[in-house]
View 1 (cartoon, one colour):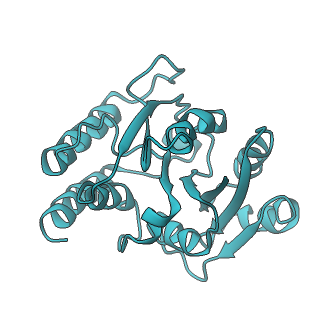
View 2: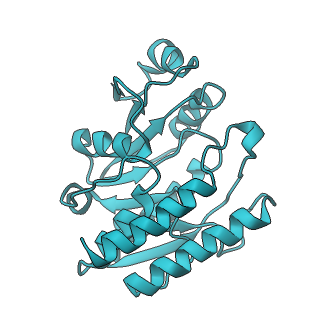
View 3: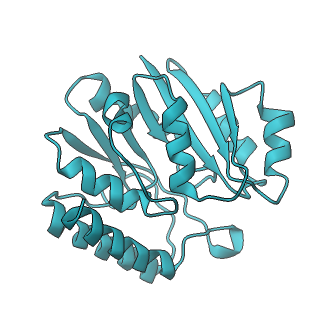
Length: 229
């Protein structure tokens, strides 16, 4: 079973090589690694072209900076695996969790699997209280509309049967991908699972990009895609 790993990357010169090497260390997984560089203005693109191009299966370069959601869509279009897994280009998530994320898909009990930073006994870095509260609020707000009982809608680790994700008409270009895809899978008759994962969150000084403005955008997306499409 081939798994397409989609890695959107924007200005992650400190981590992009490390995350790819961590993925390559995994055993017994047939992985298709796809990197989408979102017109980075640091050395990320150079690292991808010189150090990683022969380690991964596909590299896509966006001509302009278009956002995480746009980059994920480009990856979905070119993915050939039976499953698609979204991987951030930083080191907040541990590729060793692939096994537990993919197990419900491989055993045919799930169509979609979300990781969760808020369940399970795996390692979690202690970080921002208000950021955590914001994530939990957005998940609760999303659940009210979707009638799902997710604990972490905004999580970066999500895996799907490829045929399902390829047949969803995604629109959001930035971080709205998370609430949009959640709203749209909730309207289908799908088996959705959630598994606890490790989380090595980073601070803004380390390069974290999502801000309070993206929180308001997520609220807009939750309302828009649940009520109007």
